[in-house]
Length: 227
Image (cartoon, rainbow, N blue to C red):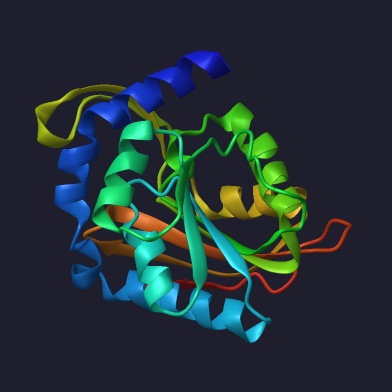
């Protein structure tokens, strides 16, 4: 699928479901203690490293952005869908949300203390993952933390109907944690920990913590634990 095609389809699909999606996931973190603990750890690590801005990339209606702000993190949201950004601004007035794509992040180099992509990489095809992670590395400062959440599995599935019964046209790509770890390593990140879990977020999901290396390849300290 060509870049322009899947991006346009993803944007239009999430524009169509934005309000219903927000209503469905608004209180989801109250049902997911492992996700809450991961976000709390991410916030603690960012603040311990001196703090700074954190981008929630693919923020949707802004629930993760707002949760991080509640944990003391200077978080802001970016989403491909103008409808999602409008919904996020309405749901969380006073917070910063902007339209943008993780395929072309319009942020200064090394300007972020951290970056979250919470179940948003799932729409990036395999050939797009490398360039996206290169963008992540460019905008995160050396030693900065990246937190990724994604569906675990193999292969892709086309979603044609979504939240509220609205028509959609998006591919959902499932990946194995070891594959994502290898991609992160190749992009200049050191994977520090990951966990797989079953919760309301996903029938089988994964969360990966990684730090930007100053330079050079090599994976160190890759820890695996399952729940």
